[in-house]
Length: 184
Image (tube, rainbow, N blue to C red; front, side, top):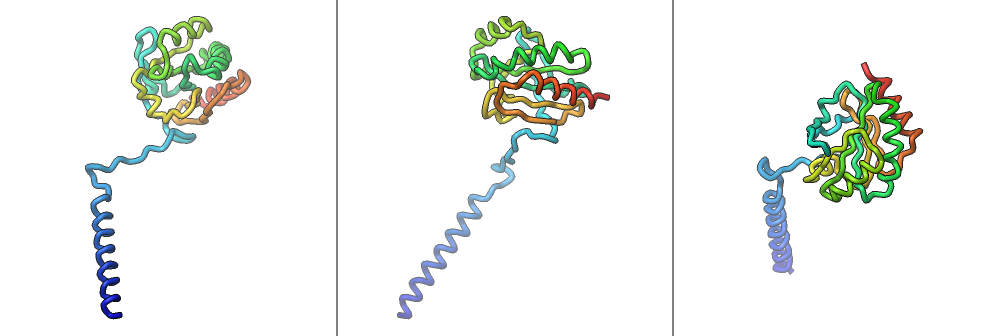
């Protein structure tokens, strides 16, 4: 029996040694540690980005501080996106002179550019259409579903996140008015 106890003790010590070694070797270091980024959410600053429009103009979200902004990620093949964009156009026209703007970010890495352009022309959309060609903004905003909408206050903080759609004109109007009420 004593030899059996020694055998189990030796196995236990060996397992503990290898377990401790594994923990030490797999622990994150300054070189390999990447901090997990949580999805943009209510109360936090909207992740900043700069993208080109269909017309080649460059727009940076942080340059719009002091305005009420709706950031909408969409694609031309997305049925709910197609359904909500006319309501977004109506609300944009109604409130744009009061400091409200819409940045419609086309998930161009998942879409066909000519289809997106044709869709925008068909609907007569006049708010800025931004092209996320390399998927940078989709990744930054951790896009999981289309459409995804972020209502951003004049301080640059996200007031509300809506995943999916379509959003009704009444909801869009209420949110636009709430954001405009916060303008200086």
